[in-house]
Length: 363
Image (tube, rainbow, N blue to C red; front, top):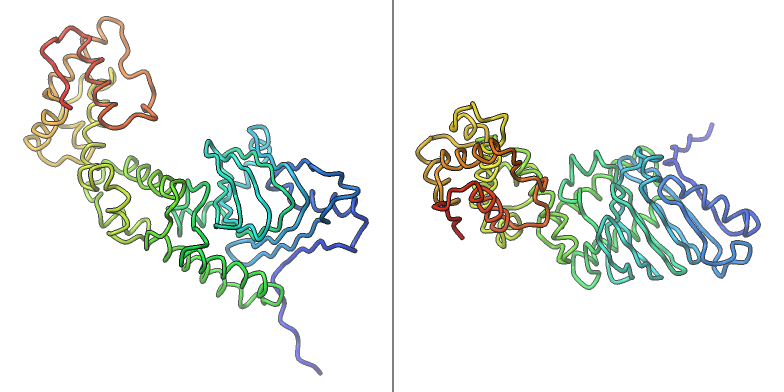
């Protein structure tokens, strides 16, 4: 009796010769439909490059190797509503080809010089030439748990001219060569190796593109805003959550005044907004401050006046005057696109319009 062969990981293959070109393209299009609507830029009955696809379900991620002739790839708002279960992050390496891509407001060109992030939580509109692409698709829950700095990543992540880019591109090639013979028992090794490598590169602060930096920064900022009321919020808790080094965190927030100053400003601005809300007019000032992580009334009052040029009570009085006149403060939502200083000046200006000419914002 011979030895039983260990089962391989689940896979899907579409290769030239399996069907006529038009039928092969139809199957290829169906295979990628969970991720994109596709529109061929060439006649699918006679494409310059026959479509190929190899997809491997390695525990914790998908590896997808594709070749195709020119295509337009679309994930618009209607597509996202129909497919809200495929909110993943894809990391892609173009072995050949060029892809002009718009992803959630970020415009970038994907070429063979780098590893790029496609964030499927956002709309995508891309036009790609004949190409060969190696992709790793990470589910959103895995990103949130193990690689939260990738949550908003879009565009170039690692330049393949850098050490980090070479390492990651090499790993993509290793996956392409290894996965066809990988067993179910060995899949976790590759999965943990991939996550560990990505975590190490991100912790080291290796992503150098503006798109990568902005994605990591946005994730850190969102985490801070969601945890302003936690007295333990600080360098240690942020580094632990994102599994990044202190040096990386310092570098990310250095243009914003540093970690501690940034957190304090966000807390002060949160209190400012809460004090001006009609629903909070009857609440104690320091009760509100406590909800944003301030521990002592004197420290809070000193920092508030230092930052806004008025006391918390003066801010509340001005807001109440606005409210009694039927005016609504801060109607611009979360003031997206404005810096802290610009937002502060705007808020102070709105409060000053209540008639307190003695209140001047501090720059």
